[in-house]
Image (cartoon, rainbow, N blue to C red; front, side, top):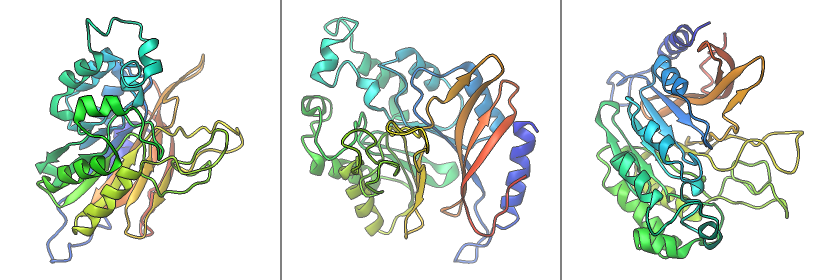
Length: 328
């Protein structure tokens, strides 16, 4: 079954259970979101074609395009689809840390590849910012860009020079300020690393899977910002991020938990299924995470793999509203 055929079948089934809003008005419409996990230099022209065939309304990129991979960022910036992007730690790999600067393969006195990436994306980059999508009636708010995760404030000189931010409290304040400026009351948060508070086991969405094993490696400033924005009465259906790969370092017997749902019905999605492109003599396939949103509520989230013929070969339903049955 082709991407278009399968997508149409899914959307028809989801729309069949759409209900009126609390004020009696009919739903604004189904929103189909693709979340692109850590790229790590794996981006091809076929990825853009696949997104077009999927018929998505919005693409969210969680960063780590490569080690300051300007050309990949250039290709993603050129995609003719609604999108929002945040940078990951690899996107400042040679610029943020002392050891990274020592290994830099280019002359940082002559070029600034972090700035080149900023210039390419412009306001598509939402780290410490926001992007309104009036046609979708939602705003994407970015968490701290270039995050390495964890409860230690890393790379202080980098954040001071680039943003004038010195600690987690100031970082939280900047994220909340961006959310305050949002045009819409439905907020999707986009981070590179996820927020603190999703569990401290090594297979939790942001759990530490290297020695000593265990511990919550999420971003505390991100978590605090989400809490503050939620207390303001905003609707937060989705928090999308990556960084912590699905394949665990300490075992090959299981994978990371990629999705959790909070008591407030916020879906926390780790989209870092790495490698996101797999090629062998027999197959060439790529993955995307898909999220269906209706009236500020996530109806379904899944991880799909698409082959070289743009056929969905595998779909793993990560979350679905109880009333839905979208399996084939």
